[in-house]
Length: 309
Length: 276
Image (cartoon, rainbow over the protein chains, first blue to last red):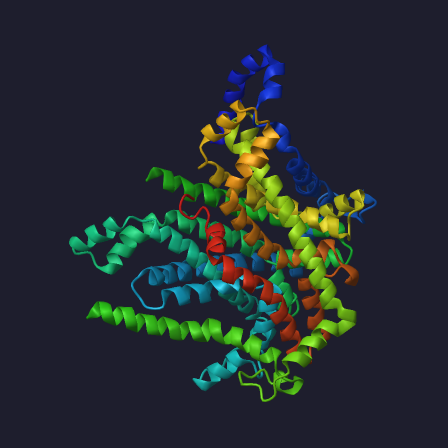
């Protein structure tokens, strides 16, 4: 939208600007040079690396000199089983964490905006993990998920369930980390939903009640559609976070056992450590493409629906 | 009757679940941090028989030549300096962007959105930093944190600046205020509430950052708190009490922030939830 209107606006403006360039330049209360310091830092350390990453992903590279090798890095990325696993795991991790955060966040927000006791306490205690460091949370849960004497499995055993080996079981490792990610992040999703639900006019609920709508009906016909901006925010935020996720995985499994819980971000780090800078950069490009290809259309879709209402 | 049942029944149920899911892990962390080595190794949720708070505390601090103290100093410098730069630069950008409609707005909006979505390209960033001579230096990491945090901060500032009447600027300009004075003396003080939000949210974020220090500031001399904790993890595998004491210590600053600025943190993090 803004991209389209910008050129026409400049076309109109250029005329007076050309007529009296000196006066305008000196007198604007909003000088362009205010952009300058931020623009320099942002360009040098974010834009330039992003742009050159496309070039260096096509090379074998040691920071000083490079050999152009075409698409070999990408071919390797889509052929080596360890790297393919990282790719699929990234999708699984992103989708599992986002879906759980949306569903749980919504339910908890509905609960916390209803008339139950101890709402303040519940809200605070749920939000606090958001502020903890991923490394700290990862270490605490590694201890809790210990297959032999971790508290989670002891607790499950007490009610007669044989818990899985969590982080050491190849089938469970990625899912375990994803669950901890949800534990840490669900508070944020909840407060976003609370903000969305609180902004819905109370009259709608009252009118629905007058007409005899059940609480289920008013949830599906009022809360859910009118909290759409919140849903959009939660989905976009958790997808961006989930697809890029690194800290928690690195603290808990380092991609293991084997490479069963590797995601692209951890593959990037491993290749960087091993000195394969070109391959690592190719991983970055793949991650860039995946995140943009998923998040951009999704956010456009979610926002378009909003305009239609 | 049903409302009362719902109010108390659901409430009690929610409290019970919250204790199991949230309170016990946090309490487990605190309790393990004050146990002795043997008891901590059991990973039990039990009351410690002998409290070792002081011993564990000094042991963690003095480990590896007071590494954690160095790390706290480094992390504090990193957080304070980068948040200060972020607040000033982001507010300047947001102000001009919001007030002056021009050909740059489209470009700027696009770049801000990119900054929120695109994952940073790691090795090329190292390449640039090395070219600037800032790789493995604290100033380099500070600039990295600024570059990666700008988008979010500009977005928060911009939404707030939209609510400040433009007449204020005009009055100041008529009184002979230049742009620098107008911004720093008139506008900047008005941004106080959103500045607090930005400071709190970004400090917690940068203090807890692990990935960027790992890539851009490796090495013991420059360790930050999260990196130190991560390195302790492999070193203290048999000393859960010390490991957890370390976690406890680096949790204190965010916890204090939370106690005092709960409202601002939530406001900053939910920005955009209503408007989209």
